[in-house]
Length: 238
Image (cartoon, rainbow, N blue to C red; front, side, top):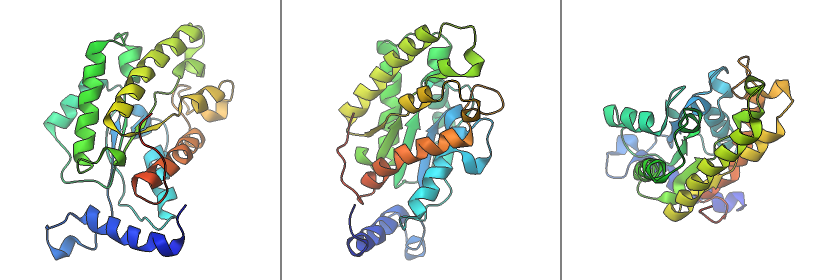
């Protein structure tokens, strides 16, 4: 990590970038913005707003002198890649963002859509749009993997091994496209699998993560986010 003395001008530059160059001096003092795209995992189904992983990540970044505005969430429980694309068509986020995240695909898998070329194209298009909202800089885009819902209490009685294998196929596509685009991969799937048998890792519905599990995801995303913002050095891609 860079020294505080070195980080200070970088933070100042980031604040200026996030304000939108050429949009008037009145915006120069605005805080950087964070756009989070996804589904129930991004919206934090079953937890308080402050426990969502994007909110917890923003809180971690604030400790590094990066006081972000509250994350802008474009996410809803049950959304597939098609649903997210349609929502972005209906109401695209406005302006540019210092940081953009994308976590999508679990509902494609849950609804038995194949992890095929059509899914790859849908995911690739969403990632391309995410890069656009990051000012055309793929290194400022975080892609979080799909967690394994097969370990949850909700999945009791289902073929957990088959679910895990299917999720691995979707994640392989997402990771390959992330590397190809030059975005940053954050693998939360192993963390989700470590939660097997731990009821406190899940919200009341027994399916979605608890705030404690989201905190672990936020910590996994912290260094990639700092790298995206130029405060640490990590390679991009998968």
